Image 1 (cartoon, one colour):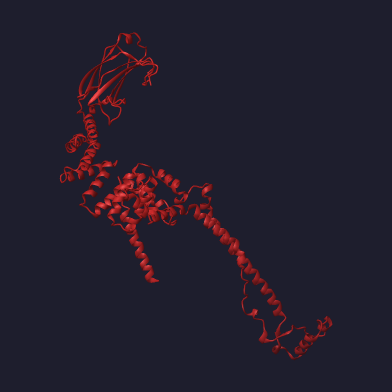
Image 2 (cartoon, rainbow, N blue to C red):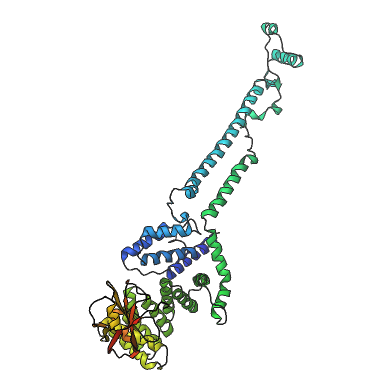
Length: 524
């Protein structure tokens, strides 16, 4: 038994150490860390039932700790996080559940058990007391009618013999004559032992405890099914059994891609395996990629961080870790990623993925010259017909516009035909839209009230409809000018408009458009 306890204690200590090593957290401030500690200590593990999620080593508790960390990093308050946990796992996770119909069992359960125990004790005590009292009274009656023959006087012996032979009790006259009525003699060998030994209580019938036992079993089973976390445990066990099949499916390029639910199950299964094998590099890398796919930056960051500790010089691991930090919403993570990427660029200056991450990281930190420099290097490495070239050019134009380096402008002069001038509506609106000449979707739009004509104006990237589609990124333009009578941007029958030809655009272009056409009634 002693050796068993020692082994058990060592297992618990090693498990706790493993859990601590996996469950590392980085906080923005000391107060945020204190909130995390308080929340994890005030939430109960659905599987263990007796431990808080801070003390539990179960997978469910680890998931709950991670969710608390994520919600705190997102800026949610402790009250909001508790409400989220109760909504997800039920009121049992709270050590102080609210008093409502669904939680009455939590409050009344302990009191009900105490009342049932007290009732059983009282019933047993009454039965024991009744049996003991009955035995004592009967023993006293029998004892008063019994005496030892060896201790009788000579005259009394004769009277006792006659008393024993007499068919009935002696009369009152016999007592008056001096005869002593004595109880029947007792043989010392057959004397009743109840006079010297304590009475034996009647045992309580087992059937008397049956209703209470059945009630206790029903309440216990219902209590566990309600708040015991059984569905979560069963789901976790099912995930563990399906993990090999999910691994094969995700690694097979010919297999159907996993859906979101399967990806979540795969991540949960891998985390369970990593608790047994914390030095499995491939699993840490796979868990990190799953975190990125599932848009879970906390899991991705922690996974690649653990992988980097296992192989600090692995370029793929370092690049994956830097990518997660680059995509993080934390500026401190972005700065760490920028430093890592700049260091890696010194050893691998032609890595397109590395250059793209460096440009994206610099743009997020508003270091636009560094972003433009990295994108220019990518353009020099890519073939001219690569589809990424156009995306990079738009990104460069956006960076130049954001940094004030963009000088691309489209100077426009709008004229009216005599027919259109005669039919100018009062209170009309002028819409100017610029497209790339191949699709009707406008890149830049400007809205003006009707005024005098001819009208001169300028459009630039500030008129772009979307940040990723800028006027400065276009190589050709087509301008449409429309007079809307009711202020609607959609062309209506009878509205006047003008359309330019598709014209090459070099950033310093000047165009003239004449409004001389009218929208037909069958205009789509």
